[in-house]
Image (cartoon, rainbow, N blue to C red; front, side):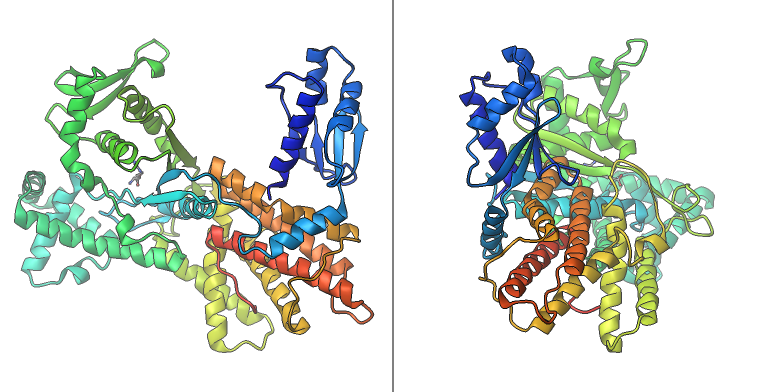
Length: 576
Ligand code: ARG
């Protein structure tokens, strides 16, 4: 059950009972300070103006009216009229027992919405690089969270697989194939391939013309040219898929809906925009003028959907994508994960699409921006020689570093076990370092911090999880239908935290912010560690009932950690 929603409903009923207006604010929050209860209701102050009564008197009336006898130990009025809510340990224990007995941890599916999630979206002309890391892992985690909450998620990998830069690439590829190279070998390093093609484009007599020729042929649907392009795209997608697999990301080939998929819709899209009068001709181009986004002199922003030569743009494809997602896929929500530099583009895109009726009033269009990944010098993350860092290489380094760390630790794990663990720890560390930061800010990439076994890191959480599994191994079978008793403070704090898992993932789903879940899991693991220190489980002298109750708490903690880490795409292990 969602504790917050549950309590809130009770307080809202109490407000009605004391004659508060229908839409009175009902602020209910988790208490942040120990001793102030578990939740706090702060509705009395705002009501005091409306009802013209002293806020403490109103608080008292709310306390008298609210129907929480079974759930609450005491309701305490503090300060100007805060109501501190202290939950009953027995009631909490019952909730935990039923959560532990349920495969969904007591979390009911929400009323289903269709969410289109546009993420990863690398540009296929080049190797996937660190810039796409954030989109890929943040988007994937939000996708998994929405699915867990019962929504229908449609992943859309809006890959950059079209555009004029393909002309030079295809001309170059054509020559390689003519010289009897196979595409896979020629394209084994896309970055090198791109560079070589660019050198020829800039320097080689006649090459630039051939490249332009290819663009024309490609757009004209020339069969041989399309074949070459398809060849290029296939190899390039396979490169991305290697990375997805390494990253334990759920994107599949069938989720690819690249820019090229909308080619056939672009002309219609533009004519629909013209027909509704949103787009007009200006200097030969097709443009939407947006007074909503005027500059400081009052000139409306110009949003171009077709160039004067007839060529289409990134924006045209995005309009076509909206037509498809909102009209055909019936998306209730669309979430797009790119870096913040595209924020203006998506704002304008939304305005145009709403004006055109491509997005209906009930449908959302949510650009979820993220900041940059910086090196330790605070500048954009680069290799030592200043080049862009390839994702695949970065991930290999993560695994190597994790392996070195794990080999330093004493353990009776076999070589092979250690390799598997190193893989999960290395990849987990890179992903978690990213996921745990508020996505809207830049963040500094630092190997030592992310691989530390202390603090808010993947290794710390994976270790906490493994530690609980070792308790279970020592305990033998755990009776998952024992009674929970919450006697010690640490047990109660852990219990309330366990109840709040659903609140954390709910927030991730509405705000597309996985860091909220990371913070939650970290706090949960930390509370478990303090509980475990203060409340021995398997020590001699612990009576059977206490032991079983604590084992149940450990079990629910373990399941919750597992579920949360799954949603983040971080793998766990039983031994570490
Ligand atoms: N390929 C683009 C890039 O790398 C991201 C695409 C995002 N999605 C979209 N619908 N425009 O910048």
